[in-house]
Each structure stands twice: as structure tokens, then as C-alpha cells.
Image 1 (cartoon, rainbow, N blue to C red):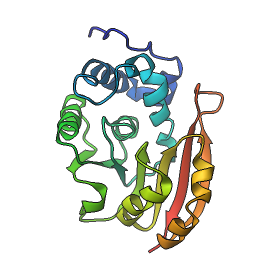
Image 2 (image 1 turned 135 degrees about the vertical axis):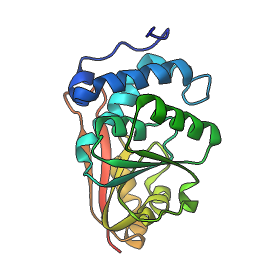
Image 3 (image 1 turned 60 degrees about the horizontal axis):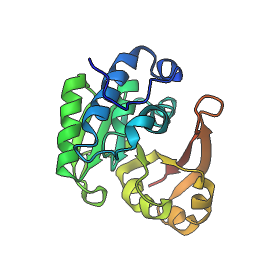
Amino acid sequence: MTTPDGLEPEPAEAAALFGERIDVGRAFALNLAEHGEPLGLIGPLEPARLWTRHILNSVIVAPLLRPGRVGDVGTGAGLPGLVLAIARPDVDFVLIEPMERRVAWLNDQVAELGLQNVTVTRARAEDVRLTDPLDQVTARAVSALRKLLPLTAPLLRDGGELVLMKGAGAQAEVEASTKELRKHRVSNVEVRTLGEGVLAEPTRVILGTVRG
């Protein structure tokens, strides 16, 4: 397979983070670099930092997931949903995305990469109707925590867990969302920093347990 022009060279850390699934991770990176900008999934500058800013930033969360059903709200190009599904074939993923062209891309990638653990649902998070509640829900670069909670917490079972990827201001978002966290019965809230000393830019995750 020819490497698309401008794609960031694969960092040394990638193989360790994906383990035996690295070949599938590479295939996804190549596909996204080649088709992402024409399809409006990523901007023109993103292939040059695709691995470090997007793919490794997503896969570093994989150890936090438990076997069960995990939803990814606003999955977009599949960041983090497809990346995590590649890294964790023992987990079932529900990718929630409202835009038709993104849903088409996600379904194409599921088929091409041979992912048996992914279901793609076209819906806005506030409109999605699931037969069974989820065990965990993740989201990346969707909205501020106080606006994200009504979109994610209702999708979880009693005792389910939020695993929300955030930037450097994660702790400030938690502190600004006290009312919303209480309203949606989210407890045991913590901000965890992942990838320090491994990634160029660590990933911050807001964790919290939802009680029915």
C-alpha cells in the first residue's frame, strides 16, 4: 500500500500501544490520511500529525475500557471509536454519529478493516434509542462537559462509566459542572492523565460513575 503524501511517519510508540493489532491500526491511519480531507473528516493540516495528535491520543485510552458495550458519542471520523475498536476486539462498540457521510465512512471502515465488534448508529446523541444501556461511554472533542453530560450519562446503565477525553482544561471543566454532575447522578469523578512520558501530548480523561 502506498503511503499518502504528507502522512506523519508512524511513531515508535504506536506498535507498543496497539500490540498485535498494529497492522489494523496502520491500515486505518492510511485510509484516513488518504480519504479524510476529501470527505471532510479531517482538515488539510491533520495528516502531518495524524498519529501523534489523533490516533495515539485515542488508543492510549484503550486500557480503561472493560469488556462489555461502549458507546462513542459524536465519533466523527472514528476518533476515538474506531481506534479503540481496533485496539480492543474484546469490547463491543456502538458508534453514534448524525452525519450521513461520516456514517458511510465508518461503515466502510468497519467492513474494510474486518471489525466484528462495531455497530454504527446514525443519530444525534440526544435522539438515540438503544435497546440496552451501555456499560461505558466515551467522547472526544464534542463539547464542554456541562453540555456533554446530558448527551452521554442517560445512555449508561446504573453503575456505568463516563470516559470522556478532554484537553488541558479538564479539571476546570469538572469544577464548572458541579450542578450538571449532580443532576445526572455522576459520582467518583476524577481527571486522569494518560501517556505522560510516552506521548508528546498526554491525553486527559474525565471519569465518572453514573447511578440510576
